[in-house]
Image 1 (cartoon, one colour):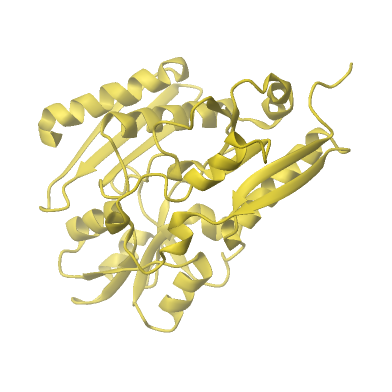
Image 2 (tube, rainbow, N blue to C red):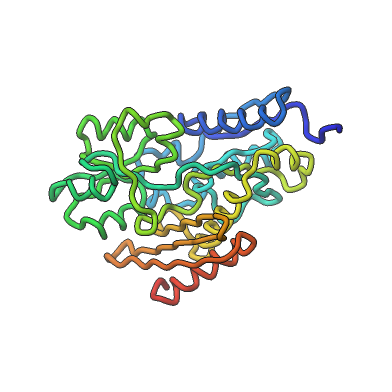
Amino acid sequence: MTKEWPDRIVVASRGSQLAVRQTEILGDLLRAADPELQVDVLTVSTKGDKDKSIPFSAIGAKGIFTTEVSAEVLAGNADVALHSAKDLTAELGPGTALICIPRRADAHDVVVGGEGVSGEERLASLSTGTRVGTSSMRRKVLLTEARPDLEVVEFRGNLDTRLRKVAEGEVDAAVLAAAGIHRLGRVNENHFGPVEPTRWVPSPAQGALAVEALAERTDLAELFGRIGSSPAAAEVACERAFSARLEGGCSVPLGCHAQASERGLLVTGMLGSPLTDQVLRDRISGTPAEAESLGVELAEAILAAGGG
């Protein structure tokens, strides 16, 4: 059978160390599907990469890590854009669509620093006034809920920079995403413990990769369909719908974690206030076919419980 896709695929991506590794992962998946395929990478600098000294919540724009990458697809310079799915805005660029969600990595948050097996044990081991780093409004709210006596400090930089800051004592601990640690092979360099995701609800689509292309590129559908994961796609669709209903961005402390299994889709959502200690959580279940509607229904329940 004659293949429909081209012999060469250009992937637009950020140039961070983690983004480079993620393009390598995508390239390996594509070449496994078509060993003769040429995969080239177009590296893009984004607003979020340039404004490294400014807190995400202060930059004030959504899509700070994705807009410029997506623009290369819209301009015809790249066939697809590769994103960390959690960085995507609710609305994609005009005429584009997510054509592939590969198998998802670990969605957990983890605590680096402290002592213990789990992240909760590590946080409990920290003394009052200990400095804990994070750049996430969601994690700040959850840290304050769990340990209001700790000092939460703004903490930007790539993964190696953040791990170095912990190792050198610039902060005593940090809360990070497990996916990046695993993808960059930093598992054995710094001891860390995962936190329980029904309480420490991850950022929507955390741990997932998303491939964006022009919706009209039907020639890419079969190729990327071969490397996509239906369970991961359902989870991401649900979590993105939850975030979209709550108008989630870098300054909104919310989380959503959908888990697809043979029994269906189990979804946990949370919404916190950046001004108070209040955190609202709820759960819902259904089928993967209901993914988006479940995300919206869960968001509506949290709004009705006081989230508004």
